[in-house]
Amino acid sequence: MSKIMEYFQTLTQIPHCSHKADKLKDFLVTFGKERGYAVYTDDVDNIMIKKEGAKLALQAHYDMVCVGRAPKLETYIKDGWMYAKESTLGADNGMAIAMMMALMDEGVACEFLFTSDEEVGLIGAEALDFALESPYMLNLDSEDEAEVYIGCAGGVDIKATKRIEKKPCHERASLPLGYNNFYEVTISGLPGGHSGVEIHKNIPNALKLFGEFCRNKPIMIASIQGGERINSIPVNLKAIVACHDRLESQAHIDVKKLKGSFEVFDGRELVEVLDKFDNGVLTFNDALDIPDSSINLALIMIEDETIMIEASARAMDAEGLEAVKNSATTHFEKYGYKVEHNGKYPAWKPEINDFSHIVNDAMKAIFGRSEFKAIHAGLECAILSQHYPDMKITSIGPNIRSPHSIHEKVEIASVEKIYEVVKRVIEEI
Image 1 (cartoon, rainbow, N blue to C red):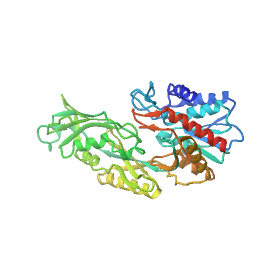
Image 2: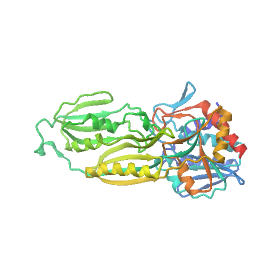
Image 3: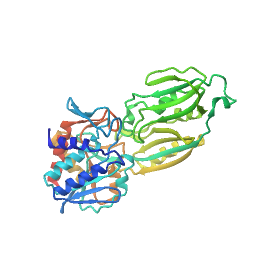
Image 4: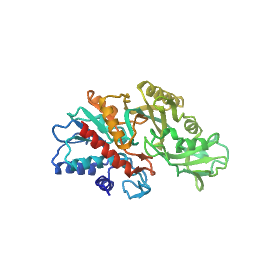
């Protein structure tokens, strides 16, 4: 096993879920100091490890999306790919960290920037407080070899809330007989995936499936909770409902009859909100061959008699993002929901320059091919380019598939080759 893979294996045993990555922060600080680098941290737990005279900054985030058994990771290798049993792997962005650790072992004079809480709204990048010296930055958070990323989507999170009033069925005089038929509706076993880079794959969405399943049914709802993360296509949903009609299980939807009675509210409007929500790819960018705008219906829950629904909108430019945000807001407000917008981050306008050509040439030298790309997801490059407007930034990474899901995997040979690309870029700079 190479040094990079050994370091990555070490990282998998250090918990570093978003908002809970203190142990990995301490580990990286110690690692840099032990190798003679100057180490700095800021108020939001970003880490800078550097040597004077650096001309290139390497950047990665050190939190991971924890789904399934994570952060308790048990890795295994199959057909040249590494996985984690029943959990996210954390190759996004742990493989970048492992490569940077290997470079520090070699004493390379770079600025190594590790940002915090990228997966929950680019928090570290937003509040970054370091003065970088390098004229160039190579972000290592992309997920396809032989591709050089020069642009990314911007995004905004949308939260809709509405008060409801739950009562026992027998107190709702408007309900017909038969509403004491209670069911537990469970949606599970969906593949899940990244709500940006995989939104075009028509991956089933648990919230949308619930809306379709209950469409045109006289549903009363006692409880509902679905989704895992704002930036993941939802895998799971569980609801307790009452229905005059008989409900039966179907693919991915398990229906179990319940005994007893629960307080409920009229769920027909909520079902319509979910069912009629315009989810997925909204417009397509033919020039870049990626979605131009999209939205993912991500989370739903009821707490203190308040329905809370969250969605993640993305677009490749500011105008498109505003249009998606406004459309979703109008949809929720039509049904009387209060809407908030959070976690907005900018798009990174595609640009080919001398630095991106250097990276592209290095990629061609190792892989025999390369092309410039943009990604329909948020990269910290967009925010970093605002912090450092004179810095030229490009993004690359190894083959990682199904990040943010229990099916996440990384191709080992691809990691080793991307590491050679990084070393070539360092030599050229």
